[in-house]
Image 1 (cartoon, one colour):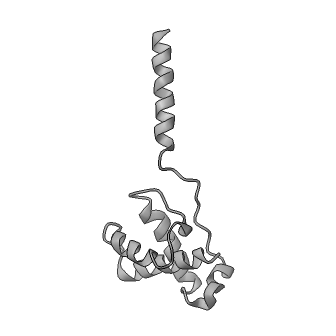
Image 2 (tube, helix red, strand yellow; image 1 turned 135 degrees about the vertical axis):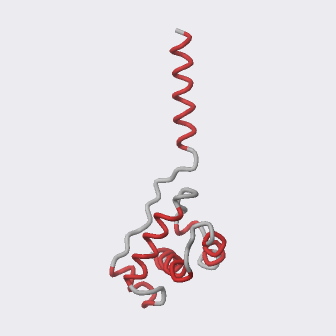
Image 3 (tube, helix red, strand yellow; image 1 turned 30 degrees about the vertical axis):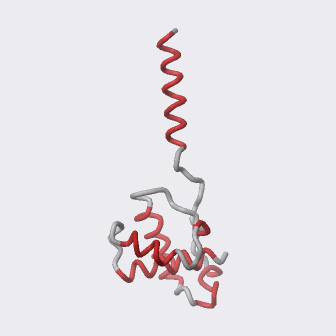
Length: 107
């Protein structure tokens, strides 16, 4: 009986710990409408697709993905600059990630 109680407590703790820092956020897909947002000031559809792919695959290596609305348009460039080195982003990749996030924020 005691072993069952310990097992139950362990399961509860694991479930609780695994839910910390997780999010149901899914970055919006790149659509022609997203690419037209802001009349192209955020980049073309190919750049936005690259930016989304980099955002999803590189950023998740260190932390959960933040919602694109979690920071202002003025905060994102600094945040991406701070993370670019850890994510091994080249300047063009950094620009693509920023373009995607800024375009996605406007939706």
